[in-house]
Length: 305
Image 1 (tube, rainbow, N blue to C red):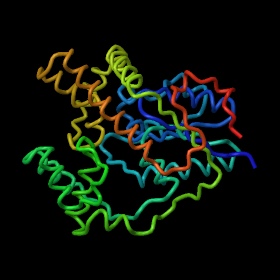
Image 2: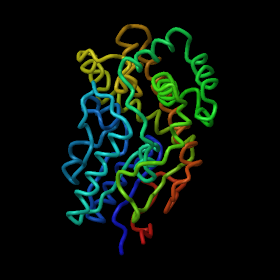
Image 3: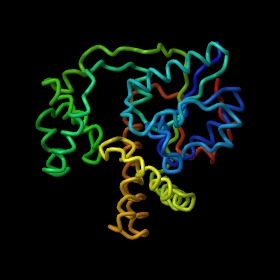
Image 4: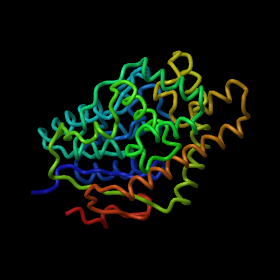
């Protein structure tokens, strides 16, 4: 039986979306978003969402479908992605999942541990603690609370660090203890193939730097202006998307446009570095791994069988 589901994965700014478009054309498939920021309706430029024109060529799913004042999480995404995969398979259409959020992919394939939902007030409490003691001290505090959960977590990975603290604070039980529970699968993925692109990091960084300039030219500052008019709480994930805090600082006259661009480039490069580390240490079953960018590879040269 021919493979029904494909994953096009890799770090940000590597060119996955364009490759996925070609793959969808070749396989008569449709594209499902697996990026934790491209789900948000209020950000399209800064999250590099596929263009309206590209979305007209091939049906795209789970892009820009969540309001910015919603805290979306891996379980919600797995639920939505599972529905879309089943919907497409029922119509004999190949789902092609595209993204760089490793936790989303791993959770969809291996299942997720059921952890109680964390109330908004607890999430705000973790922000207060960080503001009070600083990011470095918060990192060390969480490491003391749950050293097992903090293994291989970068001090820059603020979302995961916050999550570990919040689970511990709210449930009075370590995050690492919760993780020992049996994974719950929302969909049984058997027949799938992962295409993973991990080009050389320094080359990836250059693409990040260039893409940042393009985003600014394409209206990223205006996009953040419009986002700020919605008065969302700064603790929400959308307000921490790469580029939002930096442009906010520029709009508040705290930094120059040059400093703003430089900071966006730096935080995005840091994220790319974490993505490379995550994918290189992943235990997922990779069908093909490439050390080039997708646009450096001729699709027809890849044996998909």
